Length: 155
Image (cartoon, rainbow, N blue to C red; front, side, top):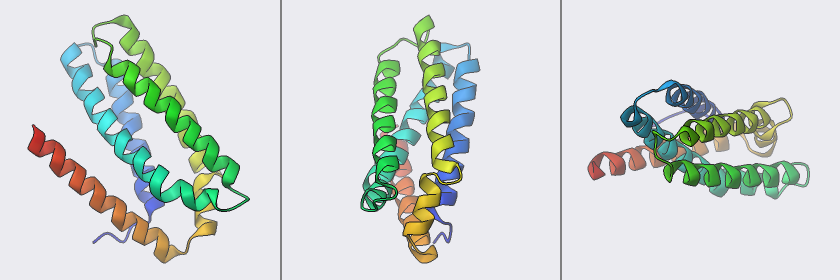
C-alpha cells in the first residue's frame, strides 16, 4: 500500500513522460521511436483518464478552481488529438518528430500550469485533506498496476 499523495505520484509521472519524450525526439531508429511512443501513449492515457475522472471533477465543483479544471480538460483534448496524429504517422516520417516535439511542448505547458503556485495541484491541496490525497494516490497506484499487468499480458 502506498502512502504517497496523488500529487507526488502525478509529479513523478510528469518527470517520467518528459524523459520519454526527450528520448523519443532524440531517437533515430523507427523501432526505438515506436517503442518509446507506445510507452508515452500508455502513460498519458492512464494519467489523463485518472485526472479527468478523479481530480478535475473535485476542482470543477469549486468556484475558485472551476476555470482551471476546464482549461486542463481542454488541454487534455488537445494532447489526445496529437497522440492520435502521432500514432497515425510513420516513425520514419519527418512529421513524426515534429508532432512529438509539439506534444512535448504542450505537455510542458500543461505540467507547468498544474505544478505552479496557485495551479491545479495547489487547488487540489485546498480542496482535499492529506488523507484524501493519499487515498487518491493509493487508487492511482492500483490502477497503474492493473494497467501495467494488462499491457504485459497483451504482449
